[in-house]
Image (cartoon, rainbow, N blue to C red; front, top):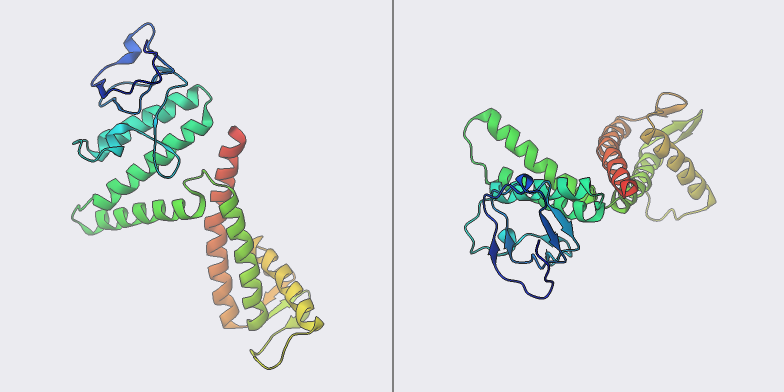
Length: 247
């Protein structure tokens, strides 16, 4: 048991299986310079310890924060996976979220650094790293549920504008615009945009063909792109929302 919040020595707990101990606890200990390389951390009892905080405001282990230490990303990833598991088991979900964020960042770096030869391995690496890049952009690896919700709203509003310009049929009402800078706006334009917004919402709910019809090849292109964005963003929003309610 270690209990000291003020003192932060560089300590190495390497290749230690803490699960074999009857009681392994760090109570209010300063772990901002602690290294746990190749140790088993799943059953360690962390009670209000101090971890190093990175510039993004999230917890980070010493091995990653100090680049002069010769530790591989695979070793760092192993520590983050165990810390995430440990904190989830103890229902400290905000801290587990920090470790999950770091775990995802490690996996992305590993995929970016992987230079394996072979067409299939290259395609796999490109898919993995682009997936992590997209995952981070949309929802901060599931830690931010407001961003994907905002993106859904923006996508809905933006594609309503595209549908209004390129044509659609909403329950028998045909709307199709030609772009004109000098035409100005009137209440009819606003009403038609409202109908386009209803069409955009219906498109996101896969209702095209049920009272909603596309009337031009350009509209079909936008609809396909609209569905693709919806299919990507909605699951990430639901995943982030689930993580939020778990806390």
